[in-house]
Length: 204
Length: 252
View 1: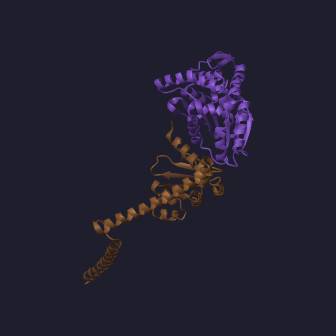
View 2: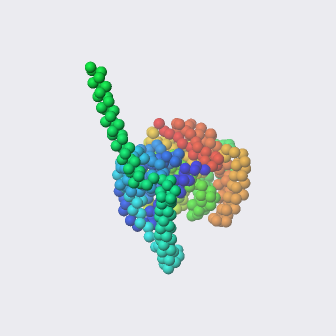
View 3: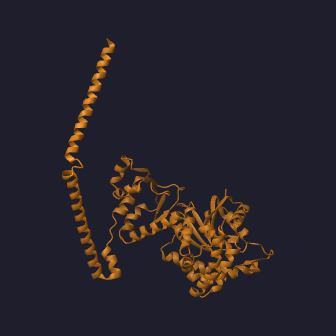
């Protein structure tokens, strides 16, 4: 059984299902209608070609011309969600983009602006009361988990910086970097002066 | 496999029948199964037919503005996708010899909102009612084995295909591994007709399905048939161990 087609089928189904849960997605999909975009993820051996119409069709086709082709790593996919990050990713050589950048930006916006009312979706199956309580519980658990993670991060940071002194304080790193820059500038000046003196000596 | 009977006779599964009567016998099979065709496809292939069709679309090279003929298009699985891929400027013709299948396909596509660039034509693959050099792509998925005169049908497809266009034939074929072949035989002749009886109330049609698969030309024979009528660069790709094969040929 061709694995790429299985993957493409699952992705296409998931993507279109998620879009169908957001009433405004058709409006954001409209500017992309008729466009094709090829994405090569470094971690995947096959390219994914997105064909936009009233929905998204996903092809494993490497032959046909596309409006926009991009190559990036899976780790930078999250950053792509914000269209403003695209230029920065290209400058940092984390993203290679050929063709119409607007297509990539519209696709990124389509995903970023997804607004799904999960409570409403859940209530279709469970009723309003259960859906409301479940979503509130999930939100509160998420907030708590976030708080605990922040707290844990702070504890690890303090321990590494002050108690065990495993890591340097950000201010110390900043000072060190400033000193290195100053030393680099001094060395460059000294090198230039030395070269000037050598030229003078040679001319006499 | 595919030993040809006398010239005025042909296969209908394992039976030998008059060429004139095969089309109506095949039509009988599809009239019987049309209403539950999609459900049965999912059940009997365990959904794998969707992956085979997806692979066919990936090999189609179809793009906006293309004119596509989905022959023996049945309930329109391929046509639905092609309709979106060719866009408003393109055209998809869903053709089937069987009006019951065509009606099911037309209703299904319209219910999905697929209108505008899809046309429905009741046509015999052996004498396609289209001008020469008309289509960029022709697909025939699980249909060729039901055609009475396959050579004539392939020649007809060659005629209506544009130079540079391609034909894709997705069809049951010969499993590559002997053990798989035996398991597949067991499944085809013992499970298929029973499920057919249970779901559609018609075991005979599914007995015909199993027999027609065995009588269909194997991978290399079909490749040769395509080359004989003029197709070039003919290749095939075995799927699921050769249970199904996708043949691709170009007209230059």
